[in-house]
Length: 157
Image (cartoon, rainbow, N blue to C red; front, side, top):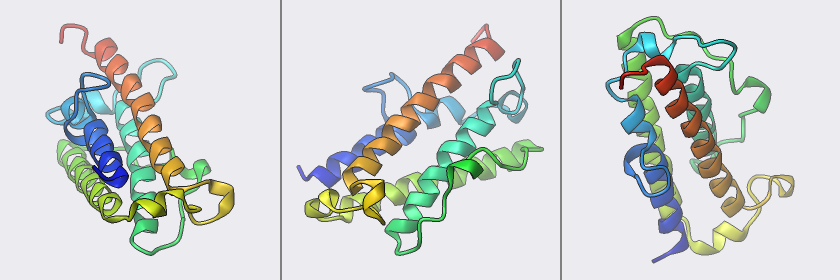
């Protein structure tokens, strides 16, 4: 199997449909979650919604580069999002999250394996491989936070 296909499948596992590493994924944790729980604050922790938006921000930003655009994402903006105000807004966001994750996975699959060893946008950002791996690892990190937050906010589930 091509390296790019393996990476695309790992991204899908993390966001859309896998259980191998964390025994869950973003879709499993967020689909059917009430927006009031997703936006509920717990002490000084980020909300589930904010963490999901944060991960989507990086997926969308990297997807933009794969589509021929510039690298426009910046860490300092990665937690700045309008607060979700309704279930409809939450579901619209989730649909976009799932669509962008699948689109990025397809773009990764289409890369020739040799591209993985090339610089991503600028040499200072490392290779395509490093950036895709970093996105997946970063996503798992925040997935763990979401799982814990759900347990704290919904102790009987």
